Length: 116
Length: 113
Image 1 (cartoon, chains in turn purple, brown):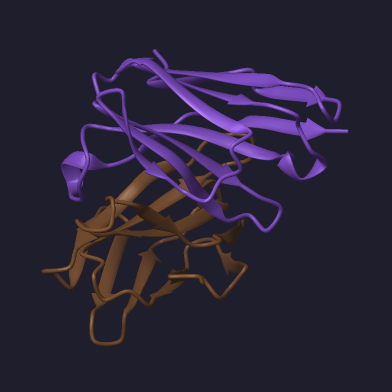
Image 2: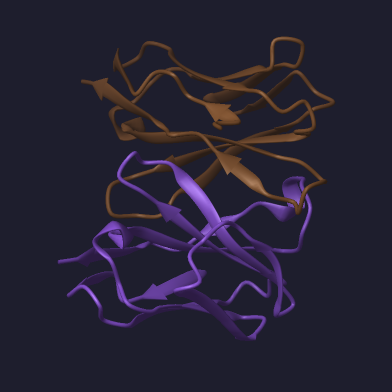
C-alpha cells in the first residue's frame, strides 16, 4: 500500500488554467506538507498543515491555495497557471510537528506539472 | 539564502569503494539532520538521520558523521553498490521557526560496476 499518494503524476496544461493536485496519506500522520522542486532541483517547502490547520505558509503566490478537508488529505489548487509554475510538486507527511526520528517526513512520488 | 548546501552536484565512484557525500549548513539552530535518497520519477525516501547531540550514526553500509563546530555533515556509503546510484538530499530541521525541514540541492551519485 502506498503511504503517501498524489494524483495526477503528470499534468500538462496551458497558461491561465486552474488545476488541482490531490494528496492522501494512510500513515495516520497529523502533519502534511507540500514541497516544490524547481528547475535548480531545490526542494522547497510551500505549506504545512497540522491537524488540518495551516502552520507554514512560505512566500508562495496566493494563486496557490492548499486545502485540508481532514488529517489524511492535503490538496493543492493552483489558479491562473504561469510558465514559472512548471515544477515537480511533492506531497509529504510526518507523524507530527517537530524534529526527531519520530517525525521523519515521508514523501509521495511527485506530480510533474508542465505549463505551456 | 541557502541554509543547507551540497556543493558537489555529482559524484562518481567505483563499485565496492567508499562514497562520501558532503553537506554544510549555516543555521546553528538546526538540531536534527537527515539524508534522503531519490530515484528518478520517485519521491525522496528517508535513508538515515542524526541528532545534534551525536557525532555519528551508523546503519548497515550507511554512516552519517556530524561536525557541529564546522557545521558540516557527511554520508559515507561503504561498500558502494550500483543500486546506490541516485540523488542524495541532505536536510536539516529545528524545533523552532515553524519546524521547517530545509533541503539541500542534492548530489547525484553514480556507482560504476
